[in-house]
Image (cartoon, rainbow, N blue to C red):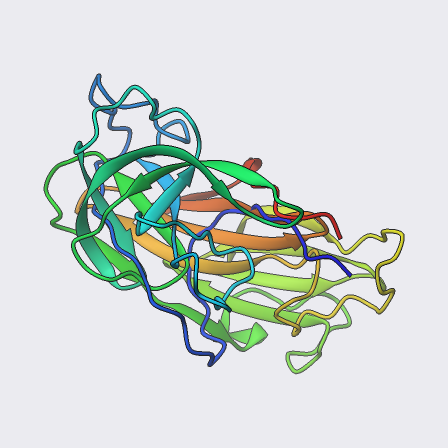
Length: 289
């Protein structure tokens, strides 16, 4: 069986108890709606400062914590993009990972092995002023790091989110799973053998939903959707959450495993308003199942 591919956003690291390999590094964030300096590419999501990146491990690391973790010979953080080619090497950036804020610099763009069958992917690489654990890293234009921080992601009881449970479901049911991250609640509900729904909550009120589907693929195993299997296909989970500066928004990066890789999407909170940006995602191709 081949490995899977990758792409999904809403940043919050979930610990599974395993030891992460040697980490890599990067820098902080900008204010809400801020524009990148003229020399930098357009920022990834409209109205959000910065870009979604990922901490790397070295190419010789045999096993990473997450199958989708990029490997790079020099960079501690990479973006899946070729949009930085015209940016001068050495350009400063700010980074925030699950280890908190750091500073970084652009190292250049290159094609590196990624996935299986000799595939390569174009990475924009960055250094970091301190080691970075595997997982999402938010990359921001240079500036003040005040208020730039990582926020906890917690696995919580389904009845702790301040919202009524779905009809016919009990809090202890394996058909429900819940998380808190960045001041938001994330409720996963299994609705059919291979399907479910993600509901995003703020203060117990629904602010966004998205469907979940394990789907079927020739050669794949056909077991029912399992919300408690960390490797399950089609189940979104918060991978990391970040406060992007003192006056900036909170972003939660969600990751979903698919048959060809991971998909990363983002949920955003600005004070008492929030939304799930599920119409746009980071979806690097890893490997067909």
